[in-house]
Image (cartoon, rainbow, N blue to C red; front, side):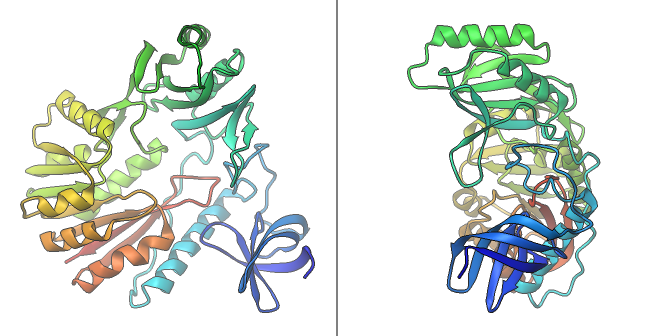
Length: 412
């Protein structure tokens, strides 16, 4: 079989690759779009499928646009017009549900589009290698030097520009940037290079802050170095304290929309709410006023500390944060719960958590998926236990990438 092949692309895969056929083999082609004919370089050969990368576009889709970022491995869909990105994401969700939950007969709602397809990210994790500062190339540890990133909020672009003017080579391995979308400032967390001199790091941070007015503080790992060691942001009417290692939704505008959808789906009217994989409480705290008690379960201790502090700052006394893995904690909690929110990481829910939620028998469950391929696995036992789907609502938190969040609502 030749290393270079020509084929027509007639579909889009869950991971974002174009899909075509070569005789009996399925071919997944990165950067290819449905409706295109391409020449592609084979990267992997398997018994039933191939993986390839576009080398030439012989017939382009009208959805193909000029890339904005180079190198752009962190924005693998930037060559697709935004309306088409949204259309493909809806197709992917519908295909995954039809494939893994064939008995479900419920239409997928139109994707809630992002108001800002660029300039939305409130956080970034950049790697350093000598004078290079940027993101890893796909599938490697090679650092692609990024001069600017229009995917980021303006405060983060300013912080990145300020750091690039300084002699950081040999001092840092990574820098984590976080911005407050509400208040327009940023803070940074440095992971030092081996044997980096602390005094040199202090000088770097001080010079960086002096030259970058939007930068409010720099930490060395979890240790305060200079200035603020956390930022504050507002979401769902709540002011959150966010340490620089805690997870927070990267797209602030779409996170607000998610809260609106979840609130409407749960129709809260008292009782108890379980929020598993709660993080800093980005659902638990905005929804707390509508419940008698909210129990938020989270394994990451800094996020638990942030959630507790935010609850205290907002004078919320009916939210209880529990530190621990959801699959170990939820089964030991006293019931009943009238509603539950499951917002797991990309790997999905632990089976023991699903069993524990079924045992608590909440009237409504909101399951939030960031991996369409795992929706069927996680929802199948809930459907078998007597729940039925009432809403499948995709929402685009990650324009310029194939990633998509899906809010799924189940009723008992």
